[in-house]
Image (cartoon, rainbow, N blue to C red; front, side, top):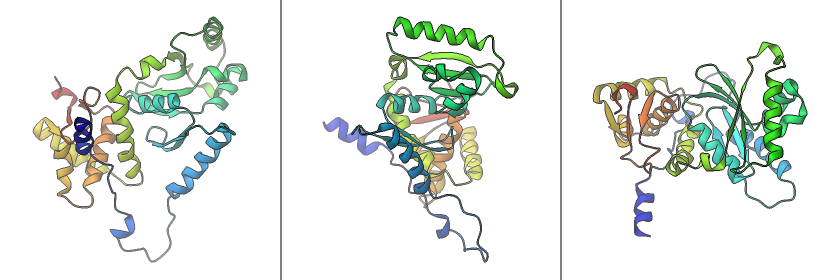
Length: 267
């Protein structure tokens, strides 16, 4: 118990990002504002509650940096897969509800076999099915049928034919640190979602080039203890998610001593 308490105390909390109104003078004329996060989340919540029906099961709420929207998940497996996908550094775009796209391309009969649509950094499109660790024969047959259909039909609007991929719960949770750490990191990305982090990203990149390898506390120190310190952490995670850096986040608990380096500096 003491070890757990010590780890929790060393785990960096999500940043308290200052509001824009506290850092600049209000403009003379009203400007278009971003939708309030609460309003956006209520939309995601409404859909999730409708899907859940009368069940009293849990809901998992989180912001997706890949999809650039708030998400609500009705099962632990769906949320765990979300964390797995958000921490996949070769992914650039995600559609966590691709039913309409699948229906347009191959018909409604295969909607239950495509849980997520991914676009990878190399431009490839992937339709991912979250399957059972021990799939039934009928599921295997349907997936083979879908694969044959994808090789025979033309995708709408001239889109590239997606590659069909299956991932299992066992594969998703193979790295427990990865899932637990990204659960925390997602909060940093959510807190900075409406901020232009360009200058913070440049400062973080300069720090890594200069020192080769840094700890998370070194990145936060770029803010000199000010109210914007958390933005440097968010900038680091934003670039990490794009595959710009290496870290030990898949192998150890996220703390202020977590390490980060440029790809060419990683051993």
